[in-house]
Amino acid sequence: MTTLPALPTPGTPSGLDTASLTGLKRVAQYYVVTAFLALLIGVLIGPLQALNYAGIDAYPAVARIPLLRNIIGSYYQGLTLHGVLNALVFTQFFTSGWLLYLPLRALDVRPSLNFAWFTYWMMLVGLLTAAVPLLRNDATVLYTFYPPMEASPVFYIGAAVMVAASLLVAAQVILAWIGWKRTHPGQVTPVVAYMGVATWLMWVIAALGLVTEVVGLLIPWSLGLTAGVDPLLARTLFWWTGHPIVYFWLLPAYVSWYAFLPRQAGGRLASEGLARLAFALFLVFSVPVGLHHQYADPNISSAWKTIHMFLTFLVAVPSLLTAFSVAAALEDAAHARGGRGVLGWVRFLNWRDASMTGQVLAMVSFIFGGAGGIVNASYAFAPIVHNTAWIPGHFHITVGTATTLSFMAITFWLVPHLTGKRLQSPRLALPSVWLWFAGMMLFAVGMHWQGLAGVPRRSHLSAASQGVYDAMQIAVPRALTGISGVVLLIAALLYFWVLLRTLLSPRMDDPEATAMPTSDAISPSSPTLAGASALVRRTEPLLALAGAALLLTLLVYLPVIGPMIAAYQAVPGHRLW
Image (cartoon, rainbow, N blue to C red; front, side, top):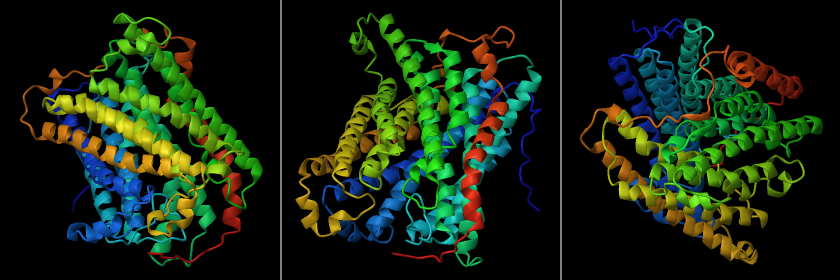
């Protein structure tokens, strides 16, 4: 009889020996490589979506390619694959490897490698299980998989296994931190570990909505065990997770922006206390915000929608803290290189470093993404852009640029650090990040512009009658959107050439020869609670903050969900493909 690896206990001995560190790096490498393989497939589908919004229907040409005919049979199947692979699979695998490795290394805690490998293979099995109905056009329900559109139960089961695996990664990191706290009483959690644990605690709370929807509603419904499902209840549970998942994408990038980017730029982290405060605020306020995605949904009180709107605005506070802190760190780096002036210091940054450049460009993109997010969260403005091309334009400069471009840039040092292989074709790394940024900005401008003109999202416009579309007089944004797909394809090919050449090259160094670029701080925190500032002491109890986050989430969701359960309206499933 096969037994599963035991969940790590808080008492795991400290001290990463060489064998444990090597094993941990190997697990992280597998997570990261799997993530980017998913991204590769997803981005190769992306230009088809961009061309669609330029009025060019490329799907008939795809249908003539035997290898692709049965796996990208329609615009909607392609859109589902693109969204699931890029927004769910890529981000989840990368974050699981990144935020497994960093916190355990920072805490100097010996991991349970058997359990770490178990979570990886479990996540991979979940991915492959969900992939079968996706590729068979049996789960073309888009990223949000709203009922009453019904997918194969195999898709829902695979997705549930993937999420469960990520929660087990969270458990390993959180329990390791608890064990570290017990063996290091009175000490302050290292800032990298603090940010990692805060992210995982937020995800545990955020995932409750999706887990409840998939396990409690969608799987029994798709198996025929229930007569139907309530679409409004399912949508509400989805958005319990659906907006916080944005921070599950972004916070791993923030870890790098705070902890590593300043050192890569030649500067220092501005303040450890502010970094901790930002992650503490994200932990508390990231989850109870989902109803701002449901302003158009009936049977939800306007009062609760308004409360969620104000809570969403509060999430802007830690993002603004991050903007201030990271900009201060970059300015510190530029001043060390001779930069002066209000903005003149910007040109003194090391723009030849592809890893630094990619992350700075990702941050620039997020300025526009954050501004657009305020529009989306506003009860007054959201109806103007709801379900228009504005929305995919927005999240392509959040997850598509701020997150994805950061992760791409991180790999330029992370992969050599994990493998001992030197970065290959480094001269192509720099244009790859600039082209990705340029392509995403073109796409964002084109799609935001089309959205304001009333062009709908999730529509196979290029196959429809072009009369109405042509009469909208949006030739410029259509052209920008189409060009963006070509630019992004070139950027992706350059990036993956660098990555794959690096992975396939022989090992040349000890992996530790590529050191982690951990930043010093202008204002560091004391290693002990007794000597730490009041801000550090008050943000240190992450479990208490997680409890407050869960309580706040329940307070603003249970009064909304309770009446839906009491007046449950079962709707049978529909398949429109």
